[in-house]
Length: 214
Image (cartoon, rainbow, N blue to C red; front, side, top):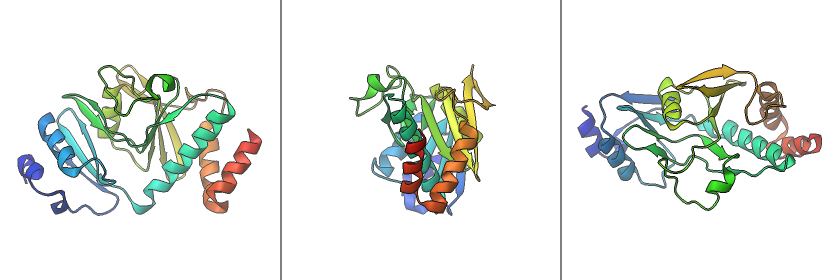
């Protein structure tokens, strides 16, 4: 199937099993924008990413949503305990025109929270990228390339009980052990333990325990 046909056909003709993704080369920015329009702003799946002519269509696993939402709760609990501002922009579509388009699992403005708190749309030509993005399950190189194009400084990837922190250094991401957002906390060990606790005892119980500790 050519990409032109893909853009013209209804999205229901694309049958991706949960947990799978499709990469399509040689896609123009206009075709990507047309596909987003056809899908509509209120959709939950599939997720669509675009970078340098490569379109990625992903169908998350049914259990995909819970870990990144739990981690988002953890992040906001810590930020509140530290009395720091934050804005949760969820899976907002971020675009660098002609180059990249990305839908994070969830993302936060922290250092730049005050700059975006009143915004309903983000213009990547004038507005800052999110300070922190969070992805659950395996994130493809295509997705990381899109994050790099958008200049998101820190990305967390949670996969199979393990959290990896990636910091943007130049044009590439490098795995590190210390978070730029929470430099004084053992995030790579703490977050997986808290996610497991949420599954074992319930998210609300885990959060109440975490808040007492903080």
